[in-house]
Amino acid sequence: MPSLVVIGAQWGDEGKGKVVDYLTSNADCVVRFQGGNNAGHTLVIDGVTTKLHLVPSGILRENTKCYIGAGVVIDAGVLLQELAGLRKSGVNVSPSRLVIDANAHLILSYHSAIDKAREEAKGVNKIGTTGRGIGPAYEDRASRSGVRLAELFALEDLKPKVLDNVNERNEYLSAVLKSSVRVDFKEVWSSIERAAEALCPHVGNVSLLVHEALKRGERVVFEGAQGALLDQSFGTFPYVTSSHTISGAALTGTGVGPGAIDYVVGVAKAYCTRVGSGPFPTELLDTLGDAIREKGGEYGTTTGRPRRCGWFDCVAMRRAIRLNGANSLVITKLDVLSGIEKIRVCIGYSLDGKKIEDIPALAGEYAKVVPVYIELDGWKENLSGITKWHQLPANARLYLSTLSEILACPISVVSVGAERASTLFSSGAEFLKSFVSGERP
Image (cartoon, rainbow, N blue to C red):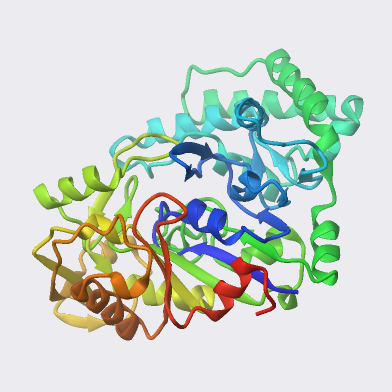
């Protein structure tokens, strides 16, 4: 029953899609368990780029089944467009291969209208959401007024509920948010009817399917979206996403118990990035930060927004390792640091002149922390052709071993490029090696 949870260990955009794609070479199932189309995973296979937002990254492995769990909120229009693109590329996305849990909730047009109106009303104090309705959809789930995929099988029973929802949301848009936007019920209902026709064949019981797969001893990958530092409860509140992004959400978002997880791997860049607002202690507000952004292609898969770039933050990473119970780390984009003469690593914080061990709970305090750095010699070599760990430049290996020592967590895999082949295993990556090879760990 080898199972693996892949989690972003920073503020998202760590390269989880490539990691999941690589680790699923012999996986039977990949399960997406939280978030919505505010997430984006980019895969590069034989020079061809595929961008995914809702479909699990294992979809490009023809023998792997892909499941979308109940913890995900789904914009049917986005999902259908994504499926059409995959079919055009020759990818099998039949209902036998892609199953969506009946308890997953739909994102409807009034959710995105509210999301955008709220951000506009906040002005300079905006959170930096993608405006795709993710938060309002989760709010409706919590208030028990959301629309689940299961309800698409009983449209006549659903219709009065949706009409009430539209009327209430329009009143909220007008009276509270002072927005001129109004949502048309006929358009909402038409989108629901289209979703029912196209998605009902894909709807099933993902919790049961995953449970049975694990009982059969199949290899299951639970794919996280966004990053641990954006978790609704334990992230840098209020600059967080609307779902739980840590490894425990794989259980609640899929419908399996704690015994279902064998291994947790955290994915992190060799530096840090963040999109949108929120504290970022190691941010580089200079030409070096700009150079890293351009070399690393640091623009959002979903929004195209430029990402803020900074040095690796060990304080934030220790928090992510603890929250997720990470067994090891995958470090991506090590190649982006080539050519930097001196590389800094944040090893601690001070706040008002006092050393602190963790991220402060208040965003205002976090914005005031001063990072404590060590400095390491960089390397000039191009890493793109490297296929073995020992081929890495000595200073690159020293950088990795220093991070591992500071974090008290092994680094099992390093990525030095976007392609599958640009993935290197450390000597201590036995579980992940066996998972990829198909052998028993």
